[in-house]
Length: 183
Image 1 (cartoon, rainbow, N blue to C red):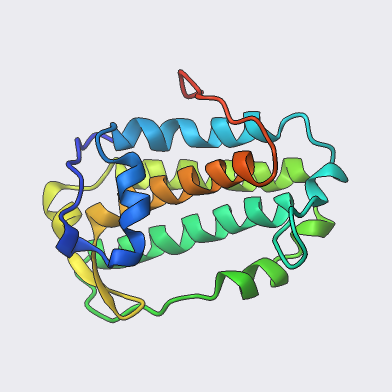
Image 2: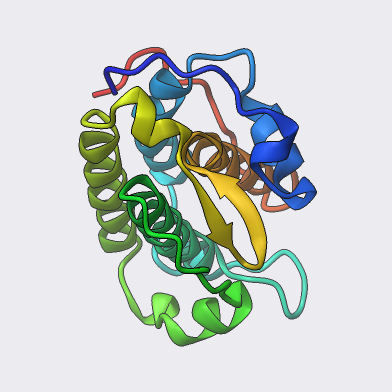
Protein backbone atom coordinates (compact mmCIF):
# COMPACT_ATOMS: atom_id res chain seq x y z
CA UNK A 1 0.00 0.00 0.00
CA UNK A 2 1.56 3.23 -1.06
CA UNK A 3 -0.84 5.36 0.94
CA UNK A 4 -0.05 6.32 4.48
CA UNK A 5 -3.39 6.15 6.22
CA UNK A 6 -4.47 7.88 9.37
CA UNK A 7 -7.00 6.01 11.48
CA UNK A 8 -10.61 6.68 10.55
CA UNK A 9 -12.69 9.12 12.57
CA UNK A 10 -15.50 7.65 14.66
CA UNK A 11 -18.10 8.86 12.14
CA UNK A 12 -16.50 6.77 9.37
CA UNK A 13 -17.74 3.43 10.73
CA UNK A 14 -20.35 1.87 12.99
CA UNK A 15 -19.52 1.46 16.69
CA UNK A 16 -19.64 -2.33 16.17
CA UNK A 17 -16.23 -2.03 14.46
CA UNK A 18 -14.60 0.21 17.07
CA UNK A 19 -12.67 -2.67 18.63
CA UNK A 20 -11.23 -3.73 15.28
CA UNK A 21 -10.15 -0.18 14.46
CA UNK A 22 -8.67 0.36 17.95
CA UNK A 23 -6.64 -2.85 17.66
CA UNK A 24 -4.59 -1.43 14.80
CA UNK A 25 -4.78 2.33 15.41
CA UNK A 26 -1.36 3.74 16.19
CA UNK A 27 0.27 1.13 13.95
CA UNK A 28 1.18 1.29 10.27
CA UNK A 29 -1.93 -0.38 8.88
CA UNK A 30 -0.16 -1.26 5.62
CA UNK A 31 2.53 -3.11 7.57
CA UNK A 32 -0.11 -4.92 9.64
CA UNK A 33 -1.91 -6.02 6.47
CA UNK A 34 1.42 -7.16 5.00
CA UNK A 35 2.34 -9.44 7.88
CA UNK A 36 -0.96 -10.97 8.95
CA UNK A 37 -1.13 -13.78 6.37
CA UNK A 38 2.31 -14.97 7.44
CA UNK A 39 1.36 -14.56 11.09
CA UNK A 40 -1.76 -16.69 10.60
CA UNK A 41 0.28 -19.34 8.76
CA UNK A 42 2.91 -19.38 11.52
CA UNK A 43 0.19 -19.70 14.16
CA UNK A 44 -1.30 -22.74 12.44
CA UNK A 45 1.84 -24.36 11.00
CA UNK A 46 2.14 -27.16 13.55
CA UNK A 47 -1.49 -28.25 13.27
CA UNK A 48 -2.56 -31.38 11.45
CA UNK A 49 -5.82 -31.31 9.53
CA UNK A 50 -7.37 -33.34 12.34
CA UNK A 51 -6.15 -30.90 15.01
CA UNK A 52 -7.56 -28.00 12.97
CA UNK A 53 -11.03 -29.48 13.47
CA UNK A 54 -10.78 -28.48 17.15
CA UNK A 55 -13.60 -26.35 18.56
CA UNK A 56 -13.04 -24.76 21.96
CA UNK A 57 -16.72 -25.24 22.88
CA UNK A 58 -19.83 -26.87 21.41
CA UNK A 59 -21.35 -24.77 18.64
CA UNK A 60 -18.12 -22.79 18.06
CA UNK A 61 -16.18 -22.79 14.82
CA UNK A 62 -13.35 -25.17 14.13
CA UNK A 63 -9.96 -23.66 13.41
CA UNK A 64 -10.51 -24.52 9.75
CA UNK A 65 -13.84 -22.66 9.76
CA UNK A 66 -12.20 -19.66 11.42
CA UNK A 67 -9.53 -19.53 8.68
CA UNK A 68 -12.20 -19.85 5.99
CA UNK A 69 -14.16 -17.07 7.71
CA UNK A 70 -11.11 -14.82 7.47
CA UNK A 71 -10.88 -15.40 3.71
CA UNK A 72 -14.63 -14.83 3.27
CA UNK A 73 -14.61 -11.64 5.33
CA UNK A 74 -11.52 -10.38 3.51
CA UNK A 75 -13.36 -10.68 0.20
CA UNK A 76 -16.54 -9.09 1.52
CA UNK A 77 -14.80 -6.12 3.13
CA UNK A 78 -12.63 -5.62 0.02
CA UNK A 79 -15.70 -5.77 -2.22
CA UNK A 80 -17.39 -3.14 -0.09
CA UNK A 81 -14.28 -0.96 -0.27
CA UNK A 82 -14.06 -1.39 -4.05
CA UNK A 83 -17.65 -0.35 -4.64
CA UNK A 84 -17.48 2.59 -2.27
CA UNK A 85 -14.13 3.77 -3.65
CA UNK A 86 -15.66 3.86 -7.13
CA UNK A 87 -18.43 6.16 -5.95
CA UNK A 88 -21.14 3.49 -5.84
CA UNK A 89 -23.78 4.75 -3.42
CA UNK A 90 -25.88 1.58 -3.48
CA UNK A 91 -26.39 0.39 0.11
CA UNK A 92 -24.46 -2.87 0.54
CA UNK A 93 -26.00 -5.73 2.52
CA UNK A 94 -24.55 -7.39 5.56
CA UNK A 95 -23.79 -11.10 5.79
CA UNK A 96 -24.32 -13.79 8.39
CA UNK A 97 -20.85 -15.08 9.23
CA UNK A 98 -22.23 -18.16 10.97
CA UNK A 99 -24.21 -19.21 7.90
CA UNK A 100 -21.11 -18.68 5.76
CA UNK A 101 -18.90 -20.69 8.16
CA UNK A 102 -21.34 -23.61 8.14
CA UNK A 103 -21.72 -23.53 4.34
CA UNK A 104 -18.05 -23.10 3.39
CA UNK A 105 -17.11 -26.77 3.79
CA UNK A 106 -13.89 -25.88 5.58
CA UNK A 107 -13.84 -28.98 7.76
CA UNK A 108 -13.61 -31.14 4.63
CA UNK A 109 -10.67 -29.16 3.24
CA UNK A 110 -6.97 -29.17 3.96
CA UNK A 111 -5.84 -26.47 6.39
CA UNK A 112 -2.94 -25.68 4.06
CA UNK A 113 -5.41 -24.93 1.25
CA UNK A 114 -7.47 -22.66 3.50
CA UNK A 115 -4.33 -20.76 4.50
CA UNK A 116 -3.35 -20.45 0.83
CA UNK A 117 -6.82 -19.08 0.11
CA UNK A 118 -6.47 -16.42 2.79
CA UNK A 119 -2.96 -15.58 1.51
CA UNK A 120 -4.34 -15.06 -1.99
CA UNK A 121 -7.27 -12.97 -0.81
CA UNK A 122 -4.99 -10.77 1.31
CA UNK A 123 -2.44 -10.40 -1.50
CA UNK A 124 -5.21 -9.27 -3.83
CA UNK A 125 -6.49 -6.80 -1.22
CA UNK A 126 -3.04 -5.34 -0.68
CA UNK A 127 -2.36 -4.97 -4.41
CA UNK A 128 -5.66 -3.20 -4.93
CA UNK A 129 -5.28 -0.94 -1.89
CA UNK A 130 -1.87 0.14 -3.21
CA UNK A 131 -3.66 1.70 -6.18
CA UNK A 132 -6.04 3.86 -4.14
CA UNK A 133 -5.87 7.62 -4.31
CA UNK A 134 -6.50 9.82 -1.25
CA UNK A 135 -9.88 10.77 -2.73
CA UNK A 136 -10.87 7.10 -3.06
CA UNK A 137 -9.79 6.36 0.53
CA UNK A 138 -12.02 9.19 1.76
CA UNK A 139 -15.10 7.93 -0.11
CA UNK A 140 -18.05 6.94 2.07
CA UNK A 141 -20.92 4.60 1.48
CA UNK A 142 -23.35 2.38 3.33
CA UNK A 143 -22.83 -1.24 4.38
CA UNK A 144 -25.06 -3.26 6.69
CA UNK A 145 -27.28 -0.19 6.95
CA UNK A 146 -24.50 1.96 8.45
CA UNK A 147 -22.16 4.60 7.02
CA UNK A 148 -18.61 3.49 6.34
CA UNK A 149 -15.52 4.84 4.58
CA UNK A 150 -12.92 3.04 2.52
CA UNK A 151 -10.30 4.12 5.10
CA UNK A 152 -12.35 2.49 7.85
CA UNK A 153 -12.65 -0.71 5.84
CA UNK A 154 -8.85 -0.92 5.57
CA UNK A 155 -8.54 -0.65 9.35
CA UNK A 156 -11.46 -3.01 9.92
CA UNK A 157 -9.85 -5.67 7.72
CA UNK A 158 -6.59 -5.51 9.66
CA UNK A 159 -8.39 -5.35 13.01
CA UNK A 160 -10.68 -8.24 12.13
CA UNK A 161 -7.74 -10.56 11.49
CA UNK A 162 -5.98 -9.30 14.64
CA UNK A 163 -9.18 -10.06 16.60
CA UNK A 164 -9.28 -13.63 15.31
CA UNK A 165 -5.56 -14.16 15.94
CA UNK A 166 -6.28 -13.16 19.52
CA UNK A 167 -9.13 -15.69 19.66
CA UNK A 168 -6.83 -18.40 18.31
CA UNK A 169 -4.49 -17.65 21.19
CA UNK A 170 -6.97 -17.13 24.01
CA UNK A 171 -9.63 -19.72 23.20
CA UNK A 172 -7.89 -22.28 21.01
CA UNK A 173 -4.60 -22.26 22.91
CA UNK A 174 -2.40 -21.54 19.88
CA UNK A 175 0.75 -19.47 20.14
CA UNK A 176 0.54 -16.28 18.10
CA UNK A 177 3.88 -14.61 17.55
CA UNK A 178 4.61 -11.28 15.96
CA UNK A 179 6.05 -11.56 12.49
CA UNK A 180 8.86 -9.08 12.05
CA UNK A 181 8.94 -9.02 8.29
CA UNK A 182 6.29 -9.91 5.75
CA UNK A 183 7.27 -12.35 3.06
